[in-house]
Each structure stands twice: as C-alpha cells, then as structure tokens.
Length: 163
Image 1 (cartoon, rainbow, N blue to C red):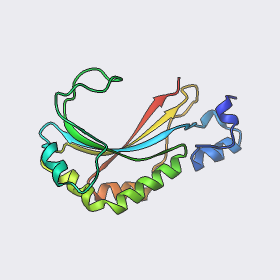
Image 2: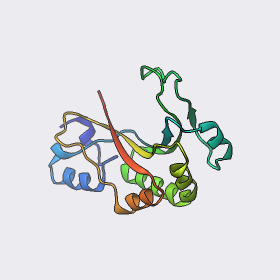
Image 3: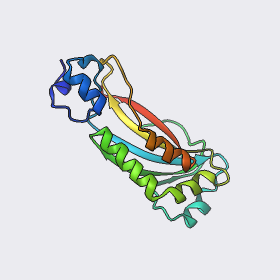
Image 4: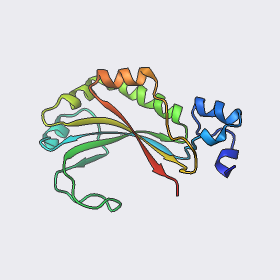
C-alpha cells in the first residue's frame, strides 16, 4: 500500500472513503491538491470589451496569439478569461465551493456563456492522481450539473499525474 493510502481518508471522496475502508484500496484515488477553475473564451471573443463590463474579477485575461505560459508550448488560439473558484485537498469541499460560486454568480456566468464569440464556458476540476491505481473517476452531484447547465456552462475534470 502506498503512503498516500495509509493516511486517514484525506482528500478522498465519500465513495472512495468507503472503498478504502473496505480494503479495496486499488480503487482509491488520492487528491493531495485540487483546484476548480472557471474558464471562458473563443476565437472571436472580444475579451477586452467583455472584461470592462464584467462584474466578476478575473484572475487571468488572455488574447489570441499570445505565448502560452512556460509549462505549455505554443501560442494561444483563443481569447478568454479565467478565475480560480476553489482549491484545497478535499474534492467534496471543492465541489461544494464551486456550487456556491455558481449560485452566487449564476447571472454573471450566464452572461459570460451567452456573450458573442464565447465558444466555451467551463468549470474545470483539476485533480492529481496516482497512475498505479486501477480507477480514475470522480462523482459530480446532480445539483452541480444542474447549476452549471442552467448558467450555460460545461463541467470538465482534468487529471494530472503525481509523478
């Protein structure tokens, strides 16, 4: 058993805690660091005009053709905005914080999603995982799916290798 699985259920979803407790640790997913980021953009998105009239405070604004961050090669093929919604080490808490953000900002998020030129408006749950584990999946509650859909937003889960 890996050191991560010996820790008492830190960062495991409810389903995975049950599997961990029943000694089916081969199914457990360890999440030492998680984040939920809202990202919206498109090739014809007038991001500067949008940001000037937006009520949300954006963490990142990018433009088509800009060089991507160091960890990624190439240039951006869209213009867009990004905001960190939540981070931590517990997936259930992350989802709850994202759902609370969706409830509090549903009108503004719907405006983003319906803005001319926006091709994607997505809540991206970035998770780390250990590839030695047999399964890599998460559960998003129906409430989170409904809230995102009502605002015209999609949900995405990105897994990142711990190695």
